Image 1 (cartoon, rainbow, N blue to C red):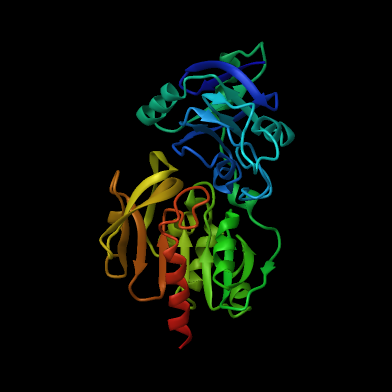
Image 2 (cartoon, one colour):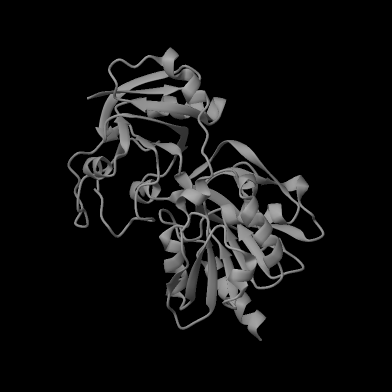
Length: 357
């Protein structure tokens, strides 16, 4: 079936549909990873977004139940150059086409994803629409496309109740802002006793379990919209060791008086170089964010840049001098991508050990 991708600037791409049929509007972003499409599809940080993969062949190893990062696909739509209909992998359980159709996600293939990516890099992330309607009229839809907003995406993806994953080690309160499952797996691998809290949990409820440490997960949307979590972080600062990832990194900065801003087209992929300033080492990282901390807004007396993006120089990590807190913009849990920075989970464990003495 024929399909159309329409951008808010008037650019139209004609291709073929896969997955579900229908129409969907979302924010168009691109991911530069060569593999890991299943983890990308199920990453809650993509809530409200239509994801374009820059790698030209997607679906070649199928889909399985082990590589999902949440209970269902979180993207609104999926864009690829070419969809593989005959995957070959011993772990494959179904095709990507069937998986998206089953979960009512619209996809489009056979469009020039290189041209699309250049448009997004030059003009910035923009809103768009995928449709299988043969009578599609852009003029009738442009106002609806431009008016699209992602409404409170964190509350769309966070857990509704406290979840407990038993372990024999340190008790960790993990605030779910749209967490990927591998954050939980990374903590359990290190023996932690993990309690997952909804994003709108109060500081008093979190501290009531007397955790050894607190984690703030990744998540979608504009960090400034998460007023409830920012207020909670303010009350938690200095009470327990804290480790924030991605959105958790941004919210911690906002809670400490810094500012954030939207990047032109964001960082999304599994090949982003980041320098650990303290170790003077550069790592390849997994990333998925559209916002960054404004470095000039940081209180240098309390906050120090611990990691820096080697492509554009943006802040990728912050350590707080007066309290046992550190945060990173990238994803040390990977999934997908390199696990070079998984050592940060060990540093969090060490921080809890020191605090318990």
